[in-house]
Length: 502
Image (tube, rainbow, N blue to C red):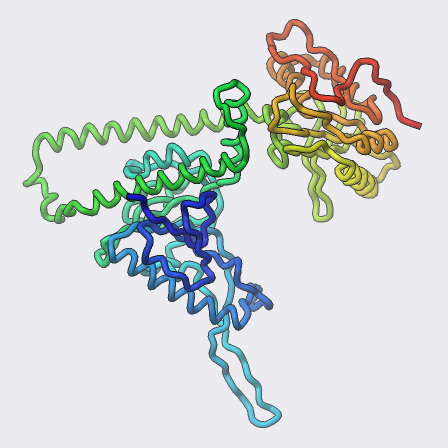
């Protein structure tokens, strides 16, 4: 029998889940499994009160009604033995109109005051003092407890993509907790008034998971292991189906546990215990201790593993991950490199040569397009803006770092920069760098520190104007197997000229 799954306020990339907005009066009573995430993003705040958003009068009325509606629907669902998966997002403190008006004075002096009060973000969750238990704090370092139980398989699949916006002080069964402080971010909530269970889970970064799945499909297709073409829709469908399957399995296991009669407290007295139980209990405790120690050690190694692979982002990343990889590569070239931010400006990378030459970089990664002149214009504005902040009269050199067609295998990529972008770089005297070209250079320097080779690489960036930078050949002493691949139509050659364009 196929399970009917309804999600309130939580977007899951699959048509198998019926999606319902929190701002609605739809019913969830026909669903076998419910996903619930209280969201206020659709309610309009047209004013502020006490420094917090004040929901408009009409939306305040709807929010009050819909909060009671969802609390009632969830209570009925749980009383009838169904499973509710609860995902908590960070909701800003706000005030709502109470619907009550105070009238003072008479005649022309009459004043009407709308009474407002704070809104409890999680008051739709049918657990006593729920809002008082919750604390808003963002993080992604989560560890399982010895009560992981029904969540074991789920956590293996979705743990690497999970994060939390809220933690709790306690749960009936705390299964997932913060790395420090052991605050609950995942677990089970049960009540004597219900036959069902609330399963609290951390949020899932579906976007990141889909991107990773798409890369896997592309790699499998490249190796001939998958005949079908990899697409984002295929990746979304795969991730969505995996998520649904995981929730269905948790629901099955939770129901089996519920069908068993919980041991009465008095039956746990030692006078009723069996010798074999005592032995096995001690054995379990020993295993739990080893598991906790291994998990701590694994987390430390996993952090190092993630950090070690940062450079590989030069091949396929965009946004902040690409900037992080770029900063690491430039530091390996012995630049002093950092992201620049102040109250007025934000630059992707500001880097300085050991001799004091300043350069300003802008990084851009695109999936199916070349880097166009818009990004070059932005870099030019940044150079002008950074110059205005300085006390000297020398402009920093602009460098545009591009990672075009970033999910396509290197030898299948087309030109990284549009013709207009290249022409603009020639007029401005900026350098163009394809980030995959930096990868073998940075990898070599990490594994074989070489100040002289780093200097030659820096010189190519400093002395190339209006062209794509051609890095020197990696010394043959390296064991690296990745040399300079031909990366499309704009692949630079040693015949390119250098020097500013007149």
